[in-house]
Image (cartoon, rainbow, N blue to C red; front, side, top):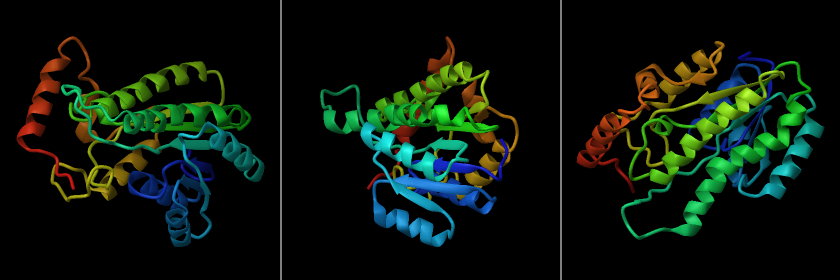
Amino acid sequence: MNMSGNTIFITGGTSGIGRALAEKFHQAGNQVIISGRRKALLEEVTAANPGMDYVELDVTDPAQITAVAKDLITRYPNLNAILNNAGIMPFDDPSKGEFDDDLLVTMVNTNLLGPARISAAFVEHLKTQEQAYIINNSSILAFLPLAHNALYSATKAAIHSYSLSQRFLLKDTSVKVIEISPPWVDTDLIYKSGDPRAMPLDAFIKETFEKLATDRIEVMVESVEAIRDNPGSNEHTLVNLFNQSVIENPIPVH
């Protein structure tokens, strides 16, 4: 990926990985536009990064997505990259009868349909650019599901699958599809705790940016690259060992 001179729209850019990537791209000489639902946070981030722009957007709202895409394409005709980062990670337990339908439907709308709708809203414009990028933020949990975040893990596996199809169908265009698959990074997605099992955010951003600057279509930090190769007929062994280790050493929550 060309790491400077782009005009990049980043969803979920007010905290965690989204904000850190937005600031890193901004510092590297790109025009960055972030989105989120909370105006106060959008103003805080852009005030700290003069020249960065923002739009309010709820990625579960198809009408808002259409309106925002039209506005941004008009105001930024050189827009050539979108980064689908917005996501939520509620816990769910598929072994129990409890099911928070409203919350989990919102998660599917945010994590899966959000990126699909954002991509559809911008893709025809992106095809007109000499070099263009759709960057989808999945998770290493796409390949190694966390049992107590079963539906979240499934949405990330779906994003990986969607990226494969999207990449194939765009192969003869100027649009390159890149998938980022973060490990557990110490952000507030679950609970910013300083847990030694979580990768520090600055280290994650540094390594991710270095790999984005290559011709990779899948970007993941070295510590989890082997997990990418785990799915197969014997994948259950690692999945079971991983989830048992989480049960024995629970992830801290509020």
